[in-house]
Each structure stands twice: as structure tokens, then as C-alpha cells.
Length: 119
Image 1 (cartoon, rainbow, N blue to C red):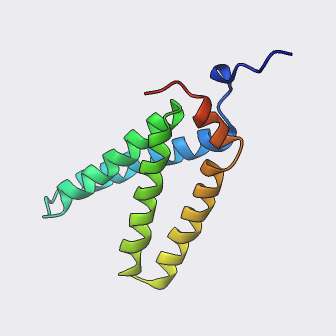
Image 2: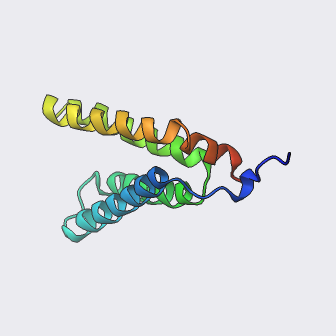
């Protein structure tokens, strides 16, 4: 009996959804903060964080395992940052973190990242 060819595994739907969610979030965030017109002291940091979301989303779609960790750290940082604003905002980010972590770290997504070619 032949083993299945894991290198040709189709991308799971949750990976596609999460990848595009982060790409769209990064693009909207970057556009919004650059469109404001005022260059505040945190603009460069916020732009870098938005670019990290875009990069993570793109490489998640390409099957790179490190991208899922980048995005989970990105979202965990938002949980911590939002705790300084309000508990409800932190709770919302925490729910997103748990849902996205579950979708990226459990099969079939975890199998997809194991079968992807090395970076």
C-alpha cells in the first residue's frame, strides 16, 4: 500500500480563511493609519505591525509553519495591548486568539504545515 503524497495536500479551509483575514486586517490597518495624515510617534510601529500581519497571512497561505506562530504571537500581543484599553476588548481578542489557535494547531491544519515543503 502506498503512503499518500503529503506534499500535494490541499490547503485546509481554516488556513485559507485565517490567512486572508490577516492579509485584509493588515492592509486595512496600514491604509487607515497612513491615511490619517498625521505622523504620530507610534505610526512607524503600527505600520510595522500591520505589515507583519500581511506577511504572516501571505506565508500562511504558502504553507510556512513559522507564519502561523508569527500570527499567533501577533494576536497574543493584541490581547495584552487591548487589556490596557478595556476588558471587553481584551476578551474579544482572546476569543479570536483561542479560535484561530485552535484552527491552526489542530488537524487538518497541523498536518498541512507538516507536509509543506521546508522554507
